[in-house]
Amino acid sequence: MMPPESGLEKIVLGKPARAILVALFFAGALAAPIPFPFKVPIIAAIALIWIWIEDRGLAPVGLTLPRRPGSTMLWAAGGALGATLIIGELILPLIERVFSIETDHAAYGPLRGNEQAALRLWAYAMFSAAVAEEIIYRGFLLHQLSRIVRQGNAGRWAAILVGAMAFAIPHYAQGPVGLASVFLVGVLFGWIFFRSDRNLWSLFLAHALVDTWGIYSLYRGW
Image (cartoon, rainbow, N blue to C red; front, side, top):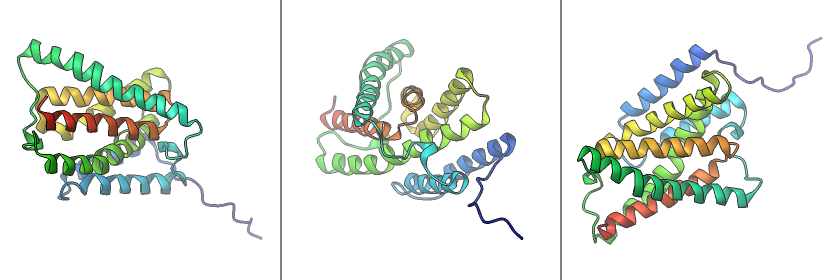
């Protein structure tokens, strides 16, 4: 007599196989001929399907209802302030001064004083960046990397740094300073992801606040 069904088992991948599949996933994502702003959300949806199939849920990427809304808000505020004030107002100007280069904002088009363009970009950013990028680069990628690297603090930092580099690469159009900015924000957000017990909601909000401030600054010409 067959034993009763106990539910589907989780899929188990070895570390080499997982590393290869994740690398192929991101290579395919970068090469996919999907127009902006749909490309990143579609990739995020595929990443969530992967997690759902493998783990039978989305808790590993932080997509559960936050248990402590106050803590979520504090992590979001810390992430937004760290990205805009410490990275944006202190570290990046120092990099620009030392290397005599400036951030290239040409990819965003003529936003100064252009309310319609700024609002359109803001809507795209909330849809494609604040939510979809966090799902991909913090939720999905850091979860995958944490399964590939060894456990412990060193492994966690390795995952954060690799994740930040992967996050920066698609932003190459912003030039060297822009890449440095995105990388540092990726490090900060990756650290928050792990320190907050994978609270992805706080990073949705932090990313939204950072992008809102950035677009408003470009609109104002600051």
